[in-house]
Length: 245
Length: 243
Image (cartoon, rainbow over all chains, first blue to last red; front, side, top):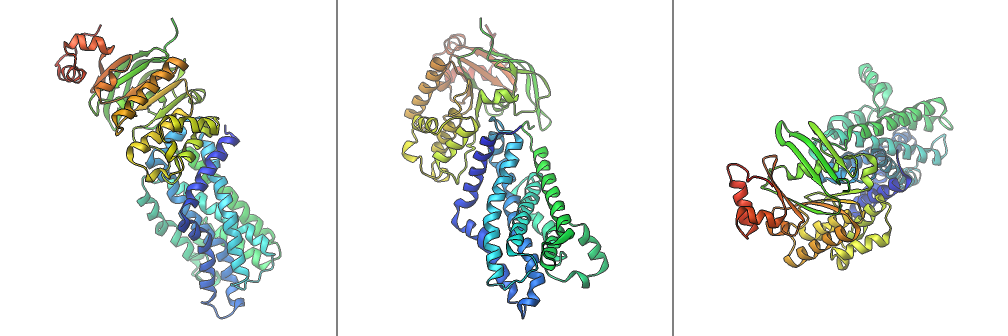
């Protein structure tokens, strides 16, 4: 079904490609931290900022990795590299697992930088220890990348893929609680929020902030994220085809 | 009599509703170099894609090295060079070739050898997107060669290469066919390149209209110039009788 050697070879190649461009890698690693500092200063005190800040620790890595993921599969298909790879002994599962491994590696680095900024410059205080929010941030980033990959697999070109950002991600971001507190939102918006994939990110982070080690709310949302991630990746494997017309 | 490396029976392919391959029958002997020529749009690339097993087909059978084209075991044995380079622009030549080497379980040494063979050793640390079109094609060729496959499917491998390098590459193709028994199917639109093949297949509108050695094609069309022979065959209202 898959081979460790092949999966790791593809992983290395993806990471090389993503991080080759210095500007792109700085953006990927630093942007969530910069956004946190920016938003922190919209609030008067660190205590006021904490609810939003905790959500941002998950939401911004997820969004930034979504952006990376959403162009990758489209690019591979348009350049013909997807067909070239699938004509080698590499399997579709190798291909998808390699993207998962690359997402894990990139998101861990990103999570460390984001959480470090959040707790120092952002002055965040949470009931759970920072490492837990870091781990959650990484999970959110992997989840974001998977969402990006499935969108990318559906799209015909990079233009379409970038249209999905305002089409799918921005609405979810607007009503997930980062911009406006959930309790004061209209009922029908809250009903939508409950079933958005992206809400798992903010709900898990909020749980981790409010309760030490997050409790059942954290577990439920983490599991939901993991399941959605797996579903998205299997979806990618199902959509890409070795044989094309 | 050894088994055919490629056996195609009554292959029909449609692409976007249009008939592209119209009942192809073909046998390719192992260890030979077969040239596929024909005007653009005649179905050369589609036929190669069928051999590699990446083309959806309407009907017919394609067997490669005794197995249905595109099956998992075959993907270790067949390597495919696409017409437009499918290398990663943001990776160096060396990184690209090593990547494909890893996919085929070959070593870094194997990668260095094929880079040398396509004449890119001096450029091996350069990013592929900074190379010329011809150099990119060669980098891509190195990625296909590193597999050391039993069957090599090459779609216009010498486009944009200078005459000296073209000659070297063709010598190399013959060497690996002779020495390692690799079966090579190569498309080209340059007839004088096809002259270096053991056998020429001429395609027109989805059919093979001539199938012979270069010498016999010259003889039948009564010209020494293969380009002229090509034109005579293509423009002939009815295909020249095949031997």
